[in-house]
Length: 164
Image (cartoon, rainbow, N blue to C red; front, side, top):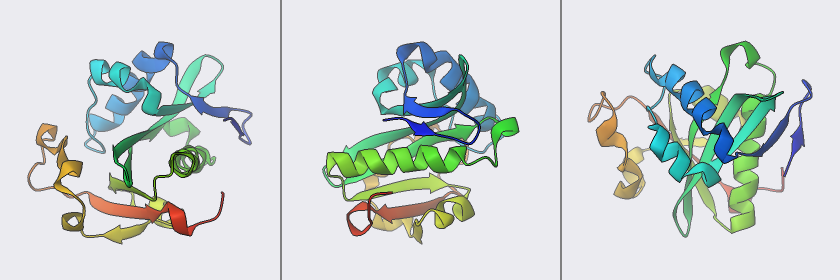
């Protein structure tokens, strides 16, 4: 699945050779407290979860869709290089995840985020994180802010939408 951007870049599934660039991009935002750090080993282990946008050989945007259960998947590790933001890349990365969830038959996608406005514009709604299964907190212990999390849980009901 490839999507065309105004900047002539494509959303596509990540390759193993993208892992170090994904690691660098995600952790640059994590260093500022905007998302969870991802170990390089974890990125390699879950490379099939990732979508990327490249400019030439450089990964400028990434996101992962991680299946949590038969009816639930999480959008995580979404990042777009600062100089490439505000061009629709984040939207296209999110849409790729929603399309994949739809293709897999997963009715609900969630994310834990500091960027509620971004996800709200894409049709996600805020919900109490306590309504999600405890399984979704599987990585929270690695966060310096745990257990006083400031992220907001956002949910998108895939089965209720139309093909994007």
